[in-house]
Image 1 (tube, rainbow, N blue to C red):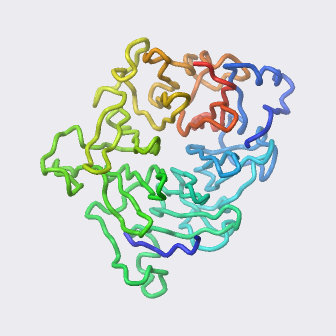
Image 2 (cartoon, rainbow, N blue to C red):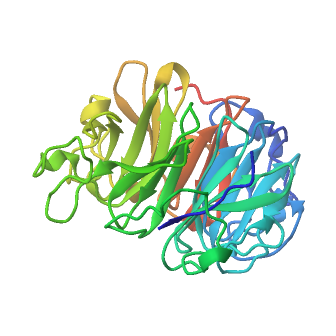
Image 3 (cartoon, rainbow, N blue to C red):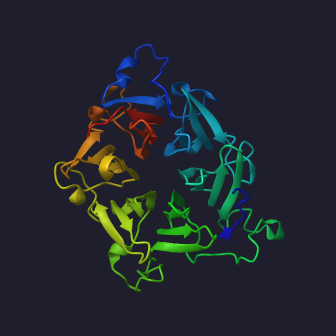
Length: 381
């Protein structure tokens, strides 16, 4: 990979809909789920239009900017969109697949943005799953820069034309850049990135050094210097996806091992938070930490640090209750996009992915397979 120069130093709306058969007034009731963006049919229709009349295509990741507005990766439309009142505004991309390039955010192509996060500096960091780029965006200035590039990128062979950091050797990993899948920014500005193909987590620090922080190679040898070779199999990742930096710690959705783990950033060790390693499953009512998951893609934290999980393989949202047990709070429906508003618990989900709490305390998540963004008003679990 090649480190490239970076020249960058509320949501407030109702569940509006033009569908005459929807009782929008219910969207303001506790534990009612409503679609706030998308039509339920994947595709591309509508630019800078009413959010509920805008077609999305594979929405998979969410973030909140410094003003409290929700940002969406409309991944298969190759766009980043943001809520402006009840509209969706495109802020990065041209609805064109290709390598992202430095410059104006409206002039760049994108290649399946799989993770986004806004750092303490107010900048938005993105990873492109198929473009092998880590990029950084100044949203207010409409500027994008390529921060890190894989060898597939035009930046890799650009020679002297590549905007390199002076006096900095090009960092490379033996594993290479495979499929970038998640990003989170720490309180100190360190950027953490998941690579689902190389099965590792690496970081870009504020001095622009790049380091592996978690993962083992295919032979079971640790990729982290502080871990002993042939370390415990528990410290191996498989298809990691969503990352969250919470309360000073880095949490990882270890998707193909069906668990959420927390990373010891000093030692590179992994500790299970929820999920039975390598055993997909489902079941409610028992201790949260002992519950089985199926291919969890993302997660986040709510009141009192309790976790909610996009249990993607089970097509459900599952949460840690106050008593420490696990419960399904959305996704008990029979399947299909079944209309709204309705009680969250009995709704059918497609493949829930990016998930967060907005500034009003509502839960917002991407239902990728139904091509919508959905909101649960004032969850009381």
